[in-house]
Length: 441
Image (cartoon, rainbow, N blue to C red):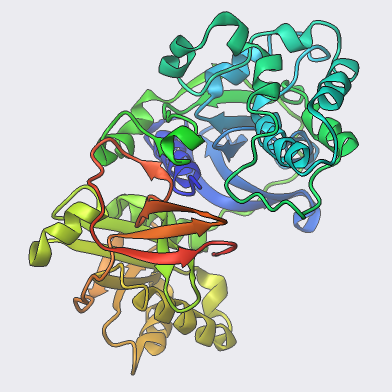
C-alpha cells in the first residue's frame, strides 16, 4: 500500500499554507460541527481576514458523504479537496454530474468482481450486461483518467474508456484470491461503482504534484515513481501546488478549535525538521506482519537499502509522535511503551525516538525511564520549533526490506516505502519474511 503518499500530500499542503501570506495559523485533525459531530478534517487555516478554510486530503478519490458533512458543519467559510489528481477532478467537474462515474473508486471494485468471476459466483457476460443496464447511455465509452501521462501514452483510445477500465482482466484473480471465499455480488458492485465524479457544490480543488504508476501484476503490485526518493518526497514540492477550481463562500456560524499540541501538530513539525517520509512501514517479525511509524529519516543513503549498505555511516531513524491527549492520563503510558518496543524489535531501525509536545517533556522522560533509555526524546513547542532533548542509542539494522507473502505469491517491499518504489531503489539484500493479512497503526 502507498501509505506514505497521503500524509506527504497533507504535509505539503500545510507548508503551502504556511508560506502563503493569506493565512496566519494552521491546525490539523480539527473537529467540525457541534461536539465534533461532522468529523475531523485534515487541515484548517485561518486567513488574515478571519475566515476559516478547510482542506481535506486524498491520495486518489474523494468521498461525497464526508465532504457534505464538512460543508454542513457551519464551521468553515470555504472547503477544498486536495489531491495528486486535482487537475483531473477539476476537469471532470465541467462534465454533467449525472453522466459520469468516478473511475478511481470503481477500480478496486473491479478487482473484487474479477475474484467473484474466478470463484464462479457469476459470469463475465452477466457482469458486463449489468454494467450496461446500470450506467447512463454513453458513459462507458467516455475517456477515463489514467495514473500518469506515460501510462496514457501507452494505451490505445479504446483502452482509455471507462468500459475498458471496468472490464480489464476480468476473471483473473488477484494475488490473495481464495476460491472458496464469498466475494462481492453484482448488486453491491454496481452500487459502489456508480459514484459521482463531481465534488459537492461549493468545494474547491487543489492539485498537489505527485504521480506514480498504478500497482499491477506486471510490476509486482508496486507503485513505481519516475524519480528518486529525495525528489519524489522533496519538502519543496509545495511550491508546485495550485488551486485549479476555486471554492465558493459558505455561511459560517462557529469556529473550530486550533490545536498546537495534538498528535498531528507534533507529527508534521517533526517531519519538517527531521524526517524524510511519514507513515513509514516496518516489519513485525514477532507477529509475522507489518506496522506503521509516524516519521522516518534516512542518513547515508536515500533509501533503506542504501542506508543498510552504508554500514556505520548509515542511519535509518524512526520517530513515534504523541500529542497532548496521550499525556493527560498516565494510563496511556504502557501503550506507548508497547509501541516503542515493537519498533525497537522490528530490526529495521538504527535509531528510535519519541516526539512529544514541549509542555509534556517530563512525561516523555517518564515513559522512557528504565528499559527505554536507548530511545531518544524530541519536543515540539506551540510555535512548531523542534528540539532533540536526548539522542537515541544506535541499534543494529538487521533488515532493509520485508517479503510480503500473500497466498501463493511473495513480494519484496522496502522498509519505510512499502509498495512505493522510487527509481533509485537498490535491490534489497536483507529481507524479513512476513505474512501481511492485517496491518497495525
